[in-house]
Amino acid sequence: MGNDFWQIKKLGGKIMRLTKYQKARLLEHNWDVYTTDDGEQNCAWISIEPSDGEIYGQVVEELGLTGEGKDVKLLIIATSEELED
Image 1 (cartoon, one colour):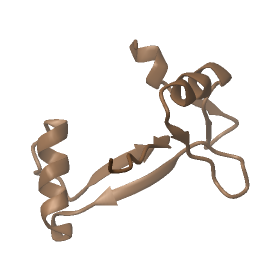
Image 2: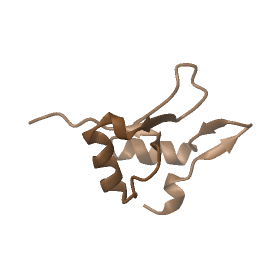
Image 3: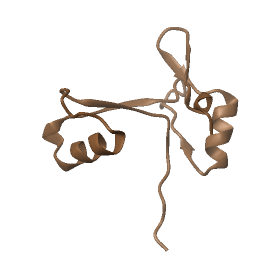
Image 4: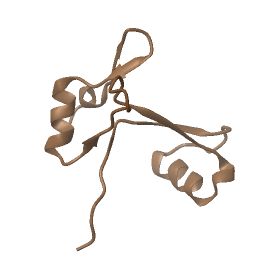
């Protein structure tokens, strides 16, 4: 998938929505598209700080970050949860 797949369109100020194509591609690969309760946005922000412990170190390592900042912010557009066999 090219970089354009991951672009998020900024519409009308701070509202973030995926295009129909982006949603379709996520669904095609068994991802659940995140949508706010009001249905306005297709994203959620989470912030992970060093005080969050091991998960902070794992995120920094996985994303190739330095870990020198006060936190790491992640933009969530979809989730997938695999069930055990």
